Image 1: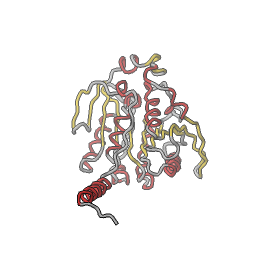
Image 2 (image 1 turned 120 degrees about the vertical axis):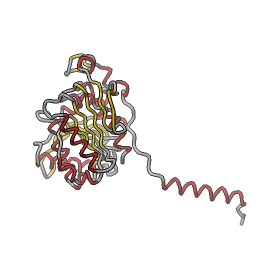
Image 3 (image 1 turned 180 degrees about the vertical axis):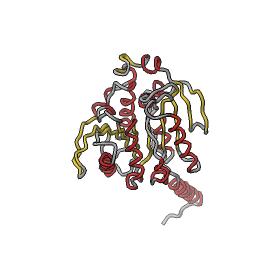
Length: 298
């Protein structure tokens, strides 16, 4: 039987030590792959505070709508979109105990790296969140970001912005989370859809799956400060136009400050689009920057 030399034994011990140390390191956070980042980057930053947690971004309708769309608010210039992602898109109907949930799914329906849902506002439908050409191509970007990063993007219909709608969205989340148990779930809510974001935050089972909430030109809810999602420090992003006629920006900013004061270093960010109106955050929010920040906060 051959013996092990002292030098070989030394190398073996070092190898085991390095292996053990590597196994104790946290898994590297998922980072969404780039997708037209230069085109979708925020315009000039006018001011910033809280180490970048609060930012005021320059927004100009003539540049950011008329200069970006071939037909203003109806069809974006082709350089902002990549329509090949439609090959990974399906219009589905999920039969559940709370009813049939129609939704558009883009990307990996099993073993997804992450799951993003967009919940529309009053008068919208599942088609809004899957429209490649409106809102400056920003929905096309999130579809590509998720599909190209091994994730899943969902844009559902729901009955209302109250209890039934919340049950439907919680059921949809549970269905896809069971298929991708390691995937964090991010819910983006436009306008009145925010009522569902806050309802999901109060649901303990759903809150345990959340990787972040995105409120886009939406509302506030003081009950969030006592919710399971707040206790779990689920990251929250607010995008808001300074001239929003539906939900006043100063009230949303005040709520953002209460979140930040309610828990030390709470992971919350606010982007104020100066001169922007109600739909501006849906058009202008940088999906990749925001979701990568949330992923890194886990």
